[in-house]
Length: 266
Image (cartoon, rainbow, N blue to C red):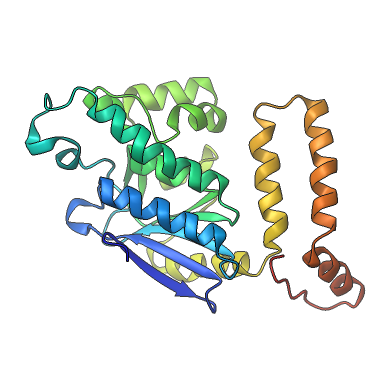
């Protein structure tokens, strides 16, 4: 079904992991791989069985950014003066939209370098788990471009204006530990720990009250533009919506009965 993704399914279908699968190019992004990723995230979002989604890369890299050979027809940068805009609008923007509005948690498993659009692909996910040998680089300026894949929206919010400018202007490589210190990465593991520790977290996410996580994502997203008054009103509305889910009832009963809850994600 997917031409450039390797899909794994775990925990009776509750977890799905998409691996970018072009290790010979360090998983550089192409129009087919961007379309595959968008479709994968959208399908997972709508699948009632899936409770958690993850994106990673095969080989030694997470993603090296846009494949420039794929961007330019026959290597002729003058073939279409609007080609970059078309790729951004037709391929990157829809993927960013699907990831940020996905009804399930979307986790980036950064197994190696994440560069340019590859770095932003990780950072637009709900959180990032990274191996200690990985690094992140906003390398767009190195070839005369601006951050895309949501970069100009998310970087200032994640880092503040000073650091966002510094990293975007210089393309500086941030180690996994540096990225964690800046709040870009949630957890960093050694190479030996990365797979088992990440899977522990993904298993936990696959058994959480998914509807509440969806509502949390919605509230966080709207906080960027809401006033405090608007956000407090939204919290009331969404909290009521969460309280009407089966998972809330199960959570309360489990607490009162002093047992582990068995959430169904609805």
